[in-house]
Amino acid sequence: MAEEKIIVTITGQDKTGIVAKIATTMYETGVNIEDIKQTIMQDYFVMMMLCNISNSKESFSTIKDKLEETAKSLHMTIWVQRKEIFDRMHTI
Image 1 (cartoon, rainbow, N blue to C red):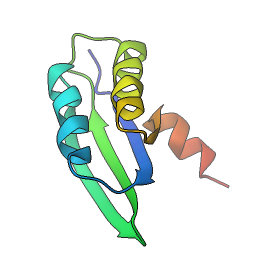
Image 2: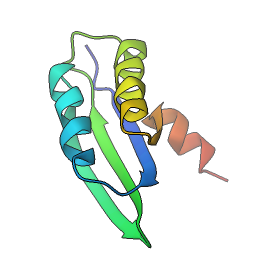
Image 3: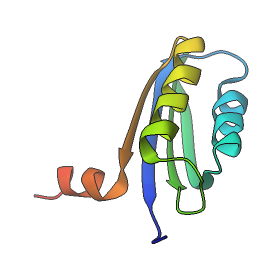
């Protein structure tokens, strides 16, 4: 399978366990986290990750659904998109 990258962005009220739960879901679906940035802005958690799904046995759609389910359980907002789409959206 060709290398496939995704961008995952998570936002919401800061609380314990956000990174652990999202990372666990990625581990369970075979997603490799290649880069991660996070910050807290006045109790508001923001995290962006560059991930590789080329070795996952799950489809992009399944990975996205599972990450959305995890984010919902945390009362967080998540965006999961293919890097190629993300790049095109941010190219003028």
